[in-house]
Image 1 (spheres, rainbow, N blue to C red):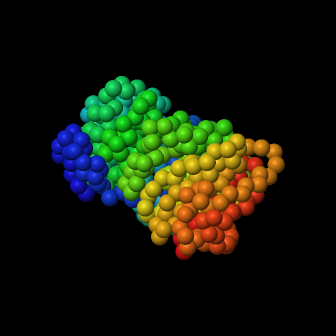
Image 2 (cartoon, rainbow, N blue to C red):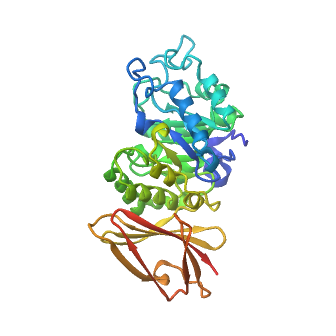
Length: 399
């Protein structure tokens, strides 16, 4: 791991000189508790679903048993509401002993024994969003504490803080994380609190970063996030690459708010946008159709493409959108979506209209089922049908 000593100067001189911790070379994958389980601390009346060591052990077990680990989901991420509401007499964070009686170190050991990684939640401000102790004035101490526990990822939120302090504070925590000598993936909420984020500076200090509203279990939430990414104001998509990715928030596939088509849509969009794949659902109660979407190796391969290039929306006409993403091997991921309507949409366009201009043509494969679509020259038209709120995702391999 590279130790950054003069972080204020180094980060201003060269983009590649910062946060070379070897992590997130492709978008990280795993599970995160927040959207599904929120800040449920009632372990007396709801022991199976409260924020506790038992919940995270159960999800680690399910990642392995359900085959999620085998396809790349490796992080088990604790979110807000895990500690006591006050630090101890020496200023250390303390996990709630009633809900985490074994302590975070023991939980990390358990997660590691499954071949997985444990993430934890903190906040740049004086308090977390849930009112628990934040890291302001304690960043070095907290970084060392997390490392001593065996933590593999830190999500640092931005509640109860001054926005003008964030350009200085978030890099400071990165510095202290690097100083621990332990590789800790750094997830920042910095741009989510800033009207005009400096994405280059953010990418200098963070592996992944949230830059929009928290996702909710609804189509309106998912489609609103995608529209933000499609509009791509400030051109934040070009910053993404190995070690640094925009994070549109969690996968809510398998919960209550999305239809089957809408779940396919979210999975495909998160793949084309090179987004972290952090599920927030109850893996113990997953519908088989939802599980199949989350475990689809072909879609995951698009997401995990080693080039790490974020896809962009190139066409928006009514309910029809087209997104493209460059992939390794002179290939391109192309996503056609229908984000509304009441009937199946018919789309016909030449490959040149979506930037596929190689004279030798392309071999097109539908991604979800791995079905051969055909070989097309640039001037030939592709005709497809898309149901409402669904996608047609193809990989175009250059011949």
